[in-house]
Amino acid sequence: MDTSLAIALILLAFGTGYVFGKKGPRSEPLPPPAAPDPEALDAVRPILASEGKIAAIKAYREKTGTGLRDAKSAVDTLE
Image (tube, rainbow, N blue to C red; front, side, top):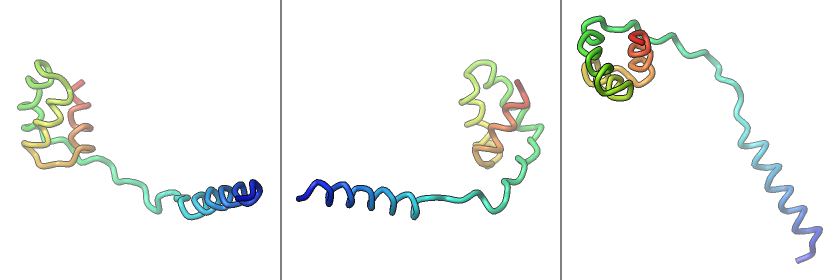
């Protein structure tokens, strides 16, 4: 294969990936996290003190059924 042809094909592949792989900004900003559940926070507080933040987030999620983002935000209010 000719060197110039190989370079042209590589540049074409990168250019195609750049054009089609480019993502624009989100159309809407994310909503703010949900308000923390005070009862769940009281139950999670000892877990945060003894086992750490990750265990506390996991326990909060199990107790409330919220998503990771909301659970992290709630546990962050305890720190």
